[in-house]
Length: 319
Image 1 (spheres, rainbow, N blue to C red):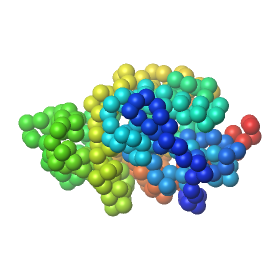
Image 2: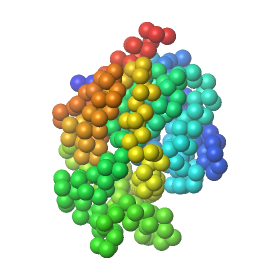
Image 3: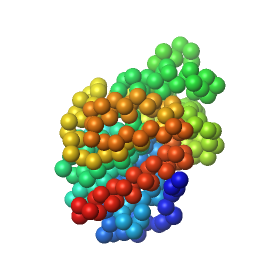
């Protein structure tokens, strides 16, 4: 099975000013003359890590990573001001123009798959291909499944801890209840809610328990940004029209794509990948039989690295 390419360091790092008050962390790795690929991280609010550079052959790709508004090394940290889906699409265009990229491959998982699809449907002429993992369509039913009723039947023990910060009288709408706390003035309440929200996701993200994932998502700096930004987006329906991504799938015609999804993904159930594939049949759908949601699980990692190699060969032949 394939695993990560060796660790590499960026050859260039920028802080790119976009709509006030935001500045985005942007880095470039690999080959400056390689095939441009944009890594679109999840959450929203998770930010990028050094490991995210390693899905790609550094001799073939110009690997571009950025932290979306309010998270990672972008500033201001955990900010919700002017933070919405259209703003993130606009930011991607600002990055593309600033780096002199004509077309690029987009690689995104979970919320990263959502944002990649929004961008590709808005700017199909700028997308050379899509590699998407853990499809998240951001319909109300998809948000409801993980944060209100669905995943709680699989993880009732973890769900109990997710419920803990919320009084019983408010549990009929958990996203709204968390939103009140994550945007409130009580710092202790805000941090308690942030940790419970993020640990819930970390615990459910892998087929087999992975304490490193839980620890990373539950760390204070990460948890605050991820919980605040995620909850802000999901409280507002991800700033999308209901079923927008499937309704606009015609705009993906002609874009080569590979969809990778874990069979036992409890965060974003696999039916979302099937729904996308039905309206975008040109893409190839790979269901990983022994994986959950996380990109680092062996079967998913193997499929993703093979996908980037395949795309490098395909796009290199077209260059």
